[in-house]
Amino acid sequence: MWRVALVLSLLVAALGALGVVAPARLVGVVRRLESPGGLYAAAALRVVLGVALVLAAPTARAPEVVRLLGAVIVVAGLVTPLVGVARFRRLREWWSARGPIFMRVWAGFALVLGLWLAYAVAP
Image 1 (cartoon, rainbow, N blue to C red):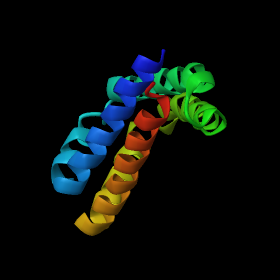
Image 2: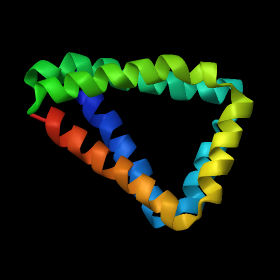
Image 3: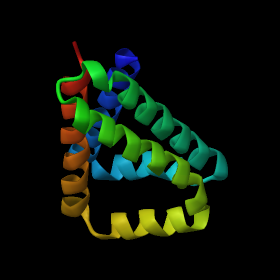
């Protein structure tokens, strides 16, 4: 299961890198999720990543942290569809209205988190 966790962690890092380099392109990616199907897809990816992290935690470099982050990500995935498309759109609009520096900082956090998770679960 560490392979699934590794691949999805690298996906998080890649999205973070995209946001650091080209925040407007990341907003374009996020816009594609503004539908019920998009929210369910995002939720499913979160749940799969979270479960993969929880299952990979025993062999991870920081098992307690990986297990905790995995559990938090599972809960976030389960809550994602409850947000609704309209609220998701307002959140995306608020986030993108803060400007490129704000978006780059948040994307930088995603980049660092994704890389750290990949490091933590890789053998």
